[in-house]
Image (cartoon, rainbow, N blue to C red):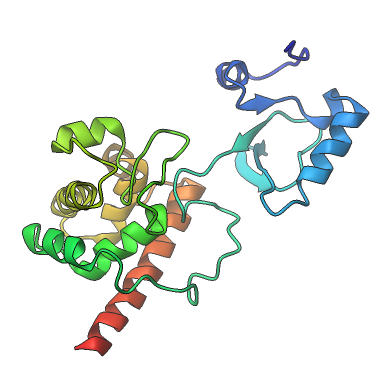
Length: 226
């Protein structure tokens, strides 16, 4: 397929070649505009990320006169524009109970936190796979899985053990600061180190907030069952 001629900042040129950046509606055909506006009304509408005054912004309608990226979330709780009410969304109280308990014991973790991270990462879908290649319940990247010795990242037990080991390492690195550890789980520990706190990435910030909510809710459920 021949790509339309567009002018992009150098930082976006490589993404355009990969098909992750498309021309704004002002540069597209009228039919393309209509199709984009129709897509935006569908349940699985695309989200568009673009710069507005140097600040990343998001919209469910393609912005005009600016280059934009089709935003692809990397985990269940990562969508900046998510319509889920994280205070009331149903919890997975019993799923993978044995595997979570074993991993929590082995790496001295709060089981409620492990459960919250699994919920945020995959919504307990063991077959989940992100556009970046992260796999399984705790969405392990291939390189991370290899580093942790996880040879079957799509299997629930090994995936949870690997994710728990990685999370425990982050907690140790950031002195048991759950917010920084979960930020590191999402954006990488180097980003947390670089910004000396939760990185100013919209996805990471909402991810940390949602994990915190889920963690508290799972702790309350665990306490109630005792």
